[in-house]
Length: 81
Length: 429
Image (cartoon, rainbow over all chains, first blue to last red; front, side, top):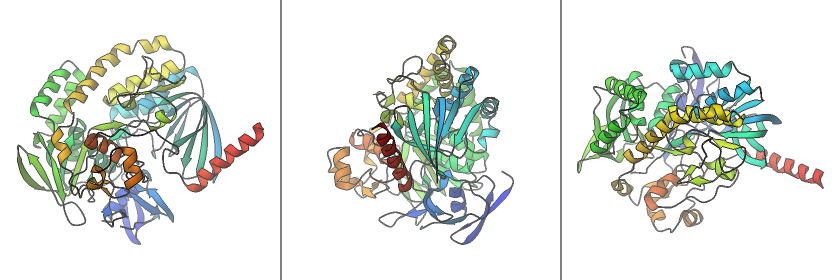
C-alpha cells in the first residue's frame, strides 16, 4: 500500500495509502462518521460491515458502510458527524 | 441497476479461511464453484487488507485458490433466500441471484460488545475492529492504544498494532490469571498453538498483560481520551487515543437460520461432514463454534470435500479437527464472561446504538421481543447484531427468529425482488 490516493472528506482534501477504506480516510480527517439519533458523534465500531456506525455519504450515495468501501481517487466523502 | 443471475453447482457464502479452504478442496471436482463475500476482497477478517499478502499462510491459501476455476464475487452481500436453492445478494451495482446445487456457509463471526459508560465515543471500538481498520489503511503509529475485553484475539491485536507502531499501553483481560494458566496447560500439547503463544508474548514483552481487569467507563470530549479500568477492586484511569475493546466472538448465524438450519447453543449444528440439518447445506468455520483460523481451515476442507462427494478424503481430516475441537472448548471455558461485567452499564448507558436505547429502558422489559416493540431496541440497521449478544448476556434474552432481508437493502433492490417474485408467480399460473 505504498501508493497514495487523494479523496475529500467534507470538502477537505485527505491523502491515504492506496487500498485504504473510506472509514480510515474519515478517521485520518479527524471527522466522526455520523450523528446518532440523540445527537452523539459516532465512529466505526466493528470495522467489518456489521454495525453500521461508520455509515457516510460516498459520491452522493448516502448510508454507505465506509469500512467496507475502498477509497478511489477523487472520491467525495461526506459525514454528518 | 444490474439484476443478474449466476448458477453454481457449489456456492460458498463467505470468503474467509473456511470459505477459501472449502473452495480449494472442492475445485478438483471440476464443478462450477462460486464464492460470494461482502468484503471488498477475499480473506475474511483475519486475512483482511494487506494481511492477505503479508501473512504466509494467507498468501499460500489465496495462491492455491487463484490457481483454481472458482468465480469470486466480492462486495456482494446475501440478504435473502428468494426461492429454494436461490440466494439473493446486493452489491453497489444492483442485485444478483445465486442459484446453487450445494451450499457451504462460511459466514464467520463478529466481536461481542458489552456496553459501558462512554463506549459510544469515537475511537472506542472492537479490538478486531481496530486491527481491521489498520489493515485497511488507518495509520496507528505513535497512537496510545488500550486493549481490553477478553479472548485470545486481544493478544493478537495488541501484537499487530505494536508491530505497526502503536504504543500499546496495556492489555486488560477480564479472565483470571488462574483461568489463563489452565488454558496454557490445555494448549501445551498443540505445538502450533504454543509456538503462536510464545511468539506473541515475545512480541509483547514490554506490554503489561493484566488479568482480572476490565473497562468501567470511557471518557473524553468528542473522542475517547481515557479509560477507567477496574482492577483488583480498585479503579485506575489510563490515558489513550484508542480503546480497542472486544469480548470474544459471536457467530454469524443469520443466514443459516433463515435457511432453516438448526442451531445448538447458538451455533450451527453440523454432522461430522459439516452438513447442517438442511440437505445440501454445509457450514464451516466460526458459525459452528469459535475455534480460530486453523479449525476453520480444516472444517472448510471437510465441507468442500463432502460437498463434492469425497467423503473418504474428508474423513482423513477428522483427527485434526478433533484435536482443534478441544481447543475450541477450552476457549469457551477460559474466556467465559464474569458476572461483574453485568454491572458496568448504568441506567443511562446506551445499549442499542442504532436507536440510542438506554439500559434503564431495557431493564424494564421482559424479553427481546418486548424490548423491540416498546423501545425500538434492535430495530436499527444492524438488526440487533451488536445489542443482541449484549442483551443476551446482560438480561438473558434470547434472540427471536430471523426475518429477511437479513441486512438493510436499498429499497429499489427490494422492489426489484418483489417484482421478480411476482413475475415468477404469474408465469406459474
